[in-house]
Length: 498
Image (cartoon, rainbow, N blue to C red; front, side, top):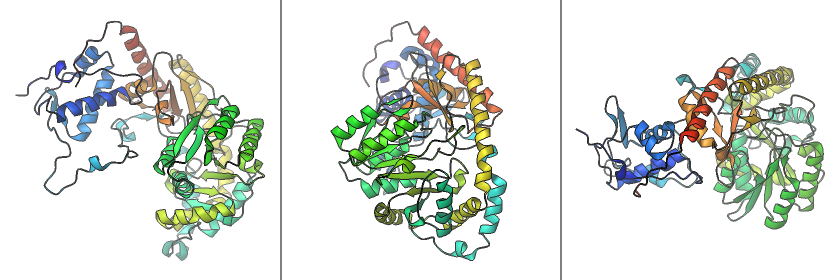
């Protein structure tokens, strides 16, 4: 019969100021105690409710910590018996096998067990993909049927820079955004994320500095750090990056380049105004600092679009990045970089070193989709549907989550919401998951680390009819977290260190 652990066996003090979420702090402490033998195999862990009360944390925090241990194989949940320790070494394997988890680099991040699949009934505001109803499926099918009639795209690898037909089609599409380019100034990538990796490998040497907005897309600063860069965040206001703070950072740090998302920024959804754009271009031109302009949400304006940084650039300092994932379909996994020809001489070989070339078939599908006029026909309805979803989410939050503070974005797919004090993003993220709704805490988007009091909500991901239901669930989770804070008046018991 399993013995029951006492709290003294693995005392733990949550540290709300730490960059790591509390449930991960707890999971790490428990794992260390089990490995050290302080909690023997066969021991039954305290109930989630009891341990949560003793720690002064939510039950969902303890539940998430136990789930983390389950994914490593150290504990197992048993009906009627609770959670039992079954192994003190999740990496134990037959002789000669490798404990792969111990070889992980500092950039490797395991998938969190809390990221549930759509099949679980979860309503997702957490990811940045498009709901199926927003994808122009019929036009894509027609383009795909025509593409497979071309024996070249079925039998040949595309050139390093990309399929000529797609680069030529993009020249015309980009012109609508004021971006002038020749086919030789366009590099096709396997999604926008690969474009970031290509630029990181092409331009960054260990010890270089890169400046970006804070918060920003975490895939960008992780790619830059993986190449050896020191990534420094610059403060934002309601209009995006603060130009005075940017100028100060360029003067002090002399970065290799600046990464900016001026149009419907991820995660905040903010839009940089025209005068701000001109000032940013002027500052970076004066310091001779290149700009990587992420424009992956740029075609989602609900009103008159603003000129891109690339179209305002007369000095040749901007590399413009686009993607088909956010406006057409993530299934294509296609992105592109528009860069001066001299930069392309560096980017092309790096792209080839990663995957030789992006698949010709999907490039051909996108080329036909663009050249047929399907994209031009898709955009107006797409923007209309996104705006309808934004309005639905704003109304649902006002009704079910009145404690949240947010500004309606003028385009894009994200809403950035400020939480009431003293709630932190990771607390609500865990509580929301238990209620059947996923959100994304702002912590993940801070290049300099720390905790966030914001959450990112994607109104493009759930079904339109699920938006109100999701807001109801989020409101229930938020009220539970607020109640826990109100009730946490008794002092937390002291525990021995693990």
